[in-house]
Image 1 (cartoon, rainbow, N blue to C red):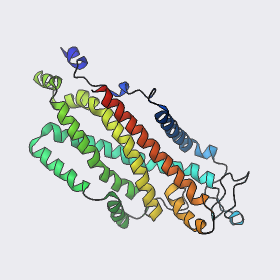
Image 2: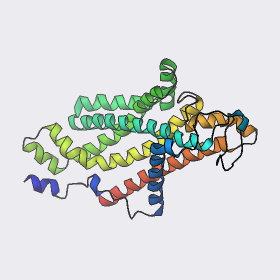
Image 3: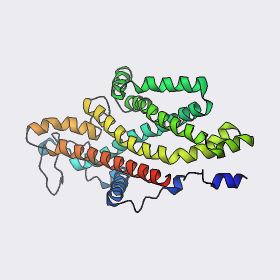
Image 4: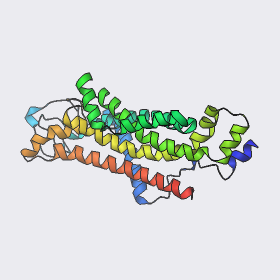
Length: 289
């Protein structure tokens, strides 16, 4: 009986059902870009030709040369080296935000959908309350208490992104809860946590995963904005948002690369994550028709 229930028509495709190939050149290109960013972040110390924090005032705002392929900033630091190392902070922060917010959102959403009643009402209103507070404002308030750096923005944005995941999971879990196979497991005496962990969550995980891919790009952009404003990663640590801030003065002097290069990296990463998330969501929708 169990085998019939878990393989019947109400069983949705798990993560293994997500195929990354055959989705068009744009999706494949986006996956390649993300893979390249991860590889660059991991191998940054090996790939970077110079120390990203090494100063050389004699080479301030040097143009593109054989020694400095993307030139240098106002302090004479190699822009390419800082971009490569900036990928680490640029990806680590959003990864923490998406990881924490996804886990909390799935927990709150499943509990709200499964328990219903007052638990659903309290958790839903709590998520609506947090949802109403702009994430950047919450981050700025927390930074004013804790101090600038990566910790406060990551905590604040994790809290701000949790309702996005929680509301999605709650809706998906409520639909899944009404499936006959869920009712059959409950009738057999399975506990609610067992049914949720072994069957309900795996069936809604692909949709949550697709949303998390898009959230990653948004979180990257938000954290870069906080660094640009001086609330996030602090100089001289290489960070794309902070590099744009530092490059503003260079733009007035006619040097575009110190600000343009990190801006292009942010745009490229955000578009790639959004494309991958949309592609996964479309694939899931087609499989469930």
